Amino acid sequence: MGCSSSTDVQPTSKTPSEAPPPIEKKAGHSSASILSGEEVAILKESWNDLNEASDLSGLGKRVFLQAFEMRPEMKRVFPFGNCWGDDLLKHPKFQAHAQSFMVIIENCVDNVDNESYDFTEGLFQLGQSHSDRIGFSQENVEVFLKSILAVWHDLLKSYDSRIEGIWSKFLAHIITIMQNGYESALNETSSRIPDL
Image 1: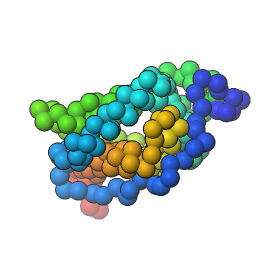
Image 2 (image 1 turned 90 degrees about the vertical axis):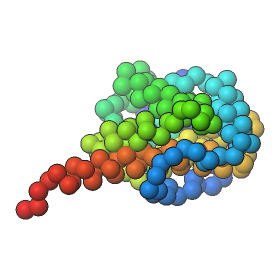
Image 3 (image 1 turned 60 degrees about the vertical axis):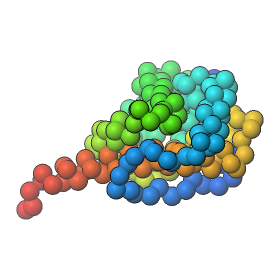
């Protein structure tokens, strides 16, 4: 039984019009000024529309299934890598990962314009915590970005190049912060290893 036999959540067959922008490495990781006020309003409105189309867990499952369809070998790096179809959808670790993935995005959307709350430190620490995870690679991250945009394209009636550009910029910012944390942890680990 393959993932395509699942009826609750299916990956989308649509793809966004263009690939997400390349992820740039930045020295700092402040969230200030990544989007204009108008872009923030569009981001939040589209997020509300997505939440009306599906719950967080459903969104996360769609994104993961889309990513696994785009890059099947990536699934092996997860603890549910040998599960397919309904077994995958019911797997507690798949459900938890899909849910927590979307909660992170929701937290960032909710607080993108909140000057009294900076979500970057949490993302940086999340990146650090992935430093021991095999498979946290640039290629896999880009697959997830493309997967998110493909799912959004499928679910949002108002999806257009402007919404895609806003989400691409926003998601690239999130990933940049996480990658900075990831690389920081790797550098810290390698600096503790003595040269032979």
